Structure formats: structure tokens, C-alpha cells
Image 1 (cartoon, rainbow, N blue to C red):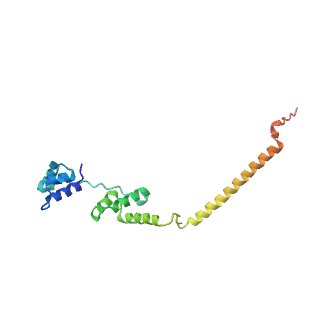
Image 2: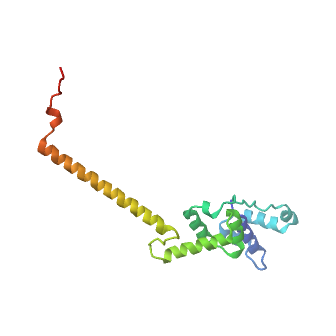
Image 3: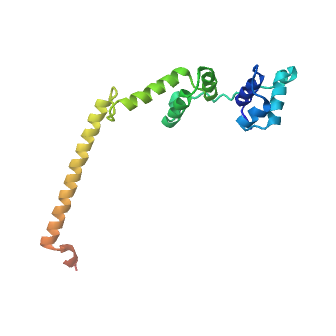
Length: 173
């Protein structure tokens, strides 16, 4: 099935003064000659113009820009960058995206590519980093203490042997 814009482009070529014939356009485009003639007839008749329905525009449900994944944002930015002004509006409506969001995503992608790979700190990150470092130090100290206790336990067992196994239970009788 051919898109409506593709059909319109071919019909417009045929309707131009001195434009190509159905046969030559068929060879160029790969669309059968009878199909081209039917499209041309539909375009040139008043009935064809008034009865033709525009393809339905499917609007994406309104989603905030935070709901979209980074992959989806990048895909939309790349797709939109290949479009002209006329088709960009329809593209934005179809995907439920504002042009300002698209511009912000494009800028974020470009700044991500131009800055070093080190993450940039946000306000409030310093306090969180200090808390995490403090917790890490505490856990490292606890781990070192546990390791020291295990080493001491092994040394005691090596020196004294397993004392608990050889002792007989005391009987009070």
C-alpha cells in the first residue's frame, strides 16, 4: 500500500504541464500504469476530490517528557531532524510532543556528546555524596573488624585445637 503523500507526488508530476506520461512514470516509480491512471482520474475529478478522506491523524496520548525513555527521546530527535517544517508539525502532533521539548532533548543530546564523560553534579548532590562516603567508611570498618575476628578465631583454633569437642559434659550425679 502506498502512502497518501507518495500518491500525491506522483499525481502532481503527471498533472504538471509537460509532465511525464503514466507509462514513463510507471517505469520510473515501479507503480503499475493502471494504478497511476486511477490516481490521476481520482485527482482530476471533482468527485474524487470531495469524497477523498484525509488519513486519520493519530494523536499520541499526552505524556510528559519525563515519562519517555532516553532511547525514545533520542529516536524522536533524530526522526524530527530529517523532516522539513511542513511535516514537522504533523509529526509532533502524532507523537504528542511539543517543539520546546524536542529542542530541549536535542540540546541535552548535544551537550551530552560535547562534555566529558564525568557526570555533572546537581545541587544537593554534595550532601548525599558525603552521607554515602560516611556510610561506606562505617561499613569498611565493620568489615575489617569482622575479618580480624575471623583471623583471631582461626589462630586460637590452631593453637588450642577444638577444645569443645574433647571435653566431656560434667555430671552432677
